[in-house]
Image 1 (cartoon, rainbow, N blue to C red):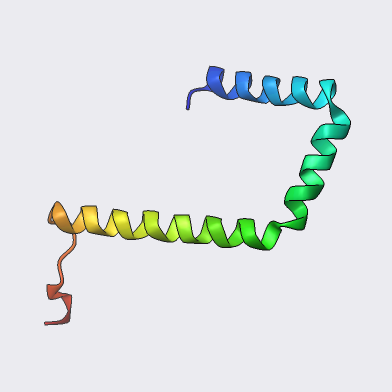
Image 2: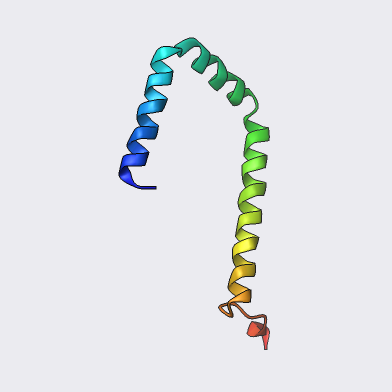
Length: 69
């Protein structure tokens, strides 16, 4: 993500927050109440991504199972 895209994203978030502060606050409180579920989902997604990266490294020959010999 380049700097311009990042700044536009931040600007959109700020505008939405200023336009509907109560709605944003209510949604943040709802997400905070479900933080355990959100954390579990993020950990599972990151774990799958990590395993996918290991598989790609193995397929490209950067990782071998011969390390124990």
